[in-house]
Image (cartoon, rainbow over all chains, first blue to last red; front, side):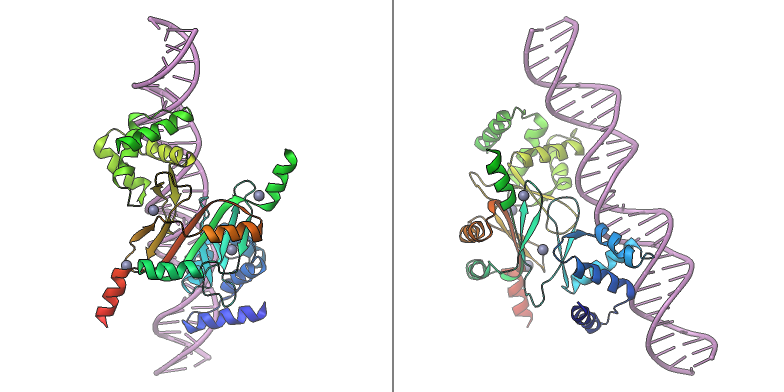
Amino acid sequence: MEHRIERIKKQLHAESYKLTPQREATVRVLLEREEDHLSAEDIYLLVKEKAPEIGLATVYRTLELLSELKIVDKINFGDGVSRYDLRKEGAAHFHHHLVCMECGTVEEIVEDLLEDVEKKVENQWQFQVKDHRLTFHGICRKCQQNNNEAN
Amino acid sequence: MEHRIERIKKQLHAESYKLTPQREATVRVLLEREEDHLSAEDIYLLVKEKAPEIGLATVYRTLELLSELKIVDKINFGDGVSRYDLRKEGAAHFHHHLVCMECGTVEEIVEDLLEDVEKKVENQWQFQVKDHRLTFHGICRKCQQNNNEAN
DNA sequence: TGGTTATTGATAATCATTTACACTTGATAA
DNA sequence: TTATCAAGTGTAAATGATTATCAATAACCA
Ligand SMILES: [Zn+2]
Ligand SMILES: [Zn+2]
Ligand SMILES: [Zn+2]
Ligand SMILES: [Zn+2]
């Protein structure tokens, strides 16, 4: 945890930004809830527990900054809100998501499944891939089991 | 064109919805601009040229309906608006997109690149895939050329 | 025909996000 | 140390996309 905070601090400094207390509190929430996919509002409420005087606009500004520095990825699952996802350490690409259409849970796939596909896209479409977004919509294991039992 | 309108009409009837003049005008815009990725507002302005009395709310309602019937797919490229994309005829899955980070153009890949990946996800993660969203972010051919010339 | 239901257009309401602005902070240099 | 300055912040207002409301209209049916 402290190690990752330290690293993020360096990434900010490298672009001459500071890790202010508000920014640090926001990053800590992101680290503590790394498996979740929190909206700006969610993050705001959690940061408020640590730093009650923080403003929502600051959280938005911080998330925007972290996005630009590719420390977090902004993602949209089709409900009206943006969600923010910490990049896995050392990952060059955004990880993938499995969204259950029945219960709404979001699973992550960290393994990069797209290497071959990206090569194909670069060769066949002459498109230089820098990053990707891949989300599968379907039925999660748990809901499949529930459905089977119901039959 | 008329053939596809006819088919969409049947899909609506199958769910006991009508193809009203407003809905038809909206569908016609989507067909005419199939390669584009229009926002609700864009579509509204184009539909108004054919049917000036139409209201924005009706366009939203129609797009929502067409989404539910999987006649269009709603997609979000990270700017603040939803965009609406006609499903290719007979396609089981949403097609893929190449978004240029420099000029913003959006190219389409209709060929399904994910068959192998989906098999892997179903086997290894026990997740039953129903649909997917895949977008690549990078540099399009044209911008690559421009960048090379500039050097 | 009269009665019922679906659909529409205009408008207001909602909700996420951004902006404006005055205030604070922390660093720097006289 | 103190004046100066830019970066960062909190509050509140503004914006912009989408949704809800509601009265009017159109399609359908007994
Ligand atoms: Zn589920
Ligand atoms: Zn994730
Ligand atoms: Zn380009
Ligand atoms: Zn498309």
